[in-house]
Length: 464
Image (cartoon, rainbow, N blue to C red; front, side):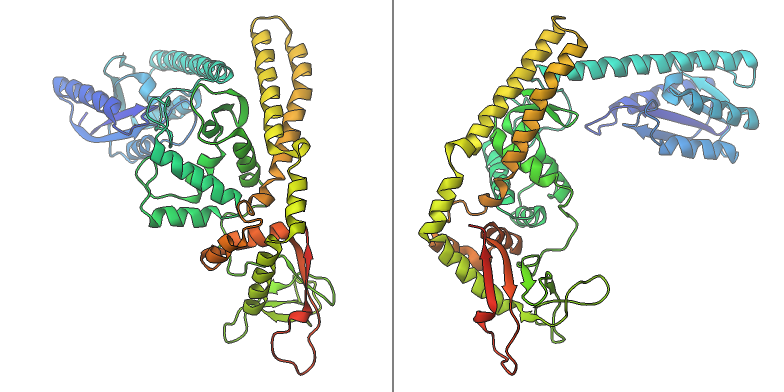
């Protein structure tokens, strides 16, 4: 071979050190040196499985180069580095037959794909490799289920944010960030605004990079933060590590962040009352539509995509100032304090729901242990599990209902705290506070000839 390709691949390299493929390349170069083979290029697919069926860019590029006549042979450490899929092997055989390229492996010998015997040998080796991969996958999956049911973690991977590398103790400064982010999201802040603030403050992720909405959202939805073990998205047991958040917080965060109606790709809200302002003439929701000079304005819009009458307009700034003052006044009213106290009755408290969730999850653990000891059949386990799982889902939905009132925590009866912060709060947080108290804001018809803001046109409809 005068222009051979070395191909190296390893399925898993979470740390990105490429040590495994490095050893393969070293052995392949030594083989080439002993046999007088000229190596033209090295092709490496690091941390890429040949079993999963996912694209292997360098393997594909190598095959294209062989097809173009740029490479006249392949050197690999072992046949299973090249293929673990019968379909890929058959395509490779067609390519080798068409081009006459040679195939050599350091530990598996040579196999001549141009002869029937060579092709049979390659297919047998491929079938064995496929069986080994399937058997390994089955064992890994079964082990993952077992670890999840026992409340243990899978090993390896990047260190979890908030915990040390062994995941048996909390990193205080990171735990403080987790708690802050969770409280802000539950209070109404957007993922985008929290990420922007953390990046501005120079707070890194566990990998030292900047925060993104995906990274932050996935972290906050993870049950591990509340000392719980999940498997394939379902909480299956209590974990063996300390918790940073409460199970109730995790349930509320998962419900909030998994809500399909939640949009995460929008630009920051500049109209905090969007969705709350309604036209007093026709009842349609008024939309954000600035004037020609750029002044922010709420409009009862008509035309394509809008159902309004097109007759009601209101400048945003004075309306938002009026509503802010009304909200601050409402926070100190005795009626609101009474209403909030009624919501926090023992029968409806999030603490009680949390206890019920814990009891049901423990019952699921007991069922799983009984099934594992073969004290019940799979059918009996399924029938027993169903009502418990239904109670868990129902209580998780009940917990989600508390998300709206979290925005008011610390402010009821203490509006001066909010008054000092109001102007600096992001618009999503302002809206969360307003929407926790207000159902809608009705804007009545304007008086002819009156061009100043008229508070009498504004009718707030309070929730509590």
